[in-house]
Length: 77
Image 1 (cartoon, rainbow, N blue to C red):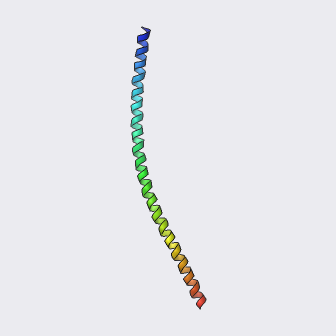
Image 2: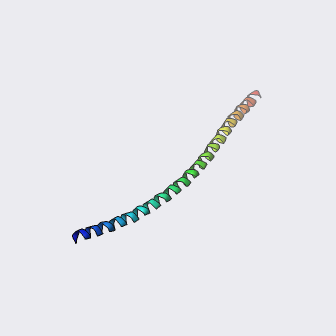
Image 3: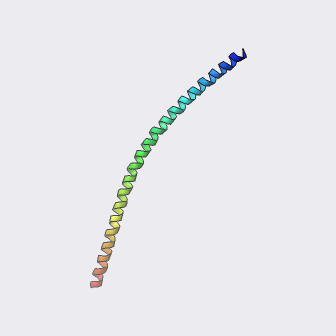
């Protein structure tokens, strides 16, 4: 009788662990999908950031060129 009780308890514990394990697998799958969405969003934002930085750098160069032209024009007067 004691062995039967132990086997029954072990079977119940195993069943409970299998259910919990499946729930964890499902959660992990959801996390992976969400992580992939976030990774794609990050890549898009990173591309926008790089493009914006490139535009900013170009504007800075143009600003410096215009400042020098203005200084030279002022010195010519």
